[in-house]
Image 1 (cartoon, rainbow, N blue to C red):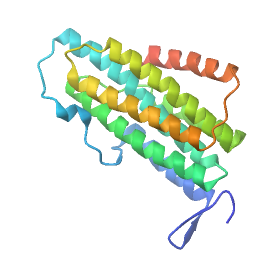
Image 2: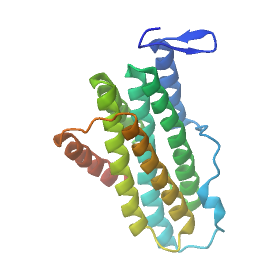
Image 3: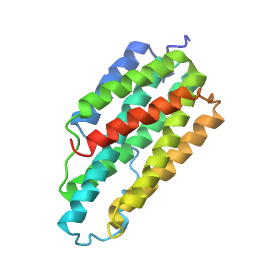
Image 4: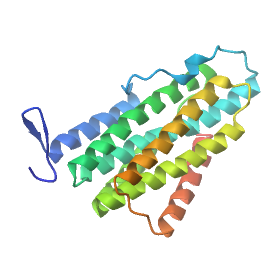
Length: 221
């Protein structure tokens, strides 16, 4: 079996199969309904309390940014999985992407409850993140895992800042963000245990700058 192939049942999957799967994921992420793992939405643990219009607007802006982050996560993992050399690394990327779909669903559900909308630029965000993921995968599996680890650590820090900014009375949004943060930490640890390489310092710095542009834009558009 070559590095670009995997086996499901008795059928061997090629990179073309994974490319078709990646295209389907892109359409589902941008314009469809993701499947996820079926985990319960953390927001449902709390009753819907009346929030002021100003609180709803602020929470919706923050949750739109978080939704964009999950759109990018799907694209990153699909790009990395498509190019991965080791089937085990590919499987890790696919599993992480599946769990991130839960986040995508939760964020979209909460946005609807708040009367908000997803970013109008989601196709652009997806395309850019997919390219970054494919580039990381092309660099090699250890570097791809290192990129995954660094991404998840930066996302965890970003979500932590949102917990500081989300209104205290918006318990449902806070529950979603807290669970997302816990999952991102676990994904980073999984990548580290799998042999992630430490990225040279200019790369994380560039990633943070790109993320600031994305989050600043997604807050409004």
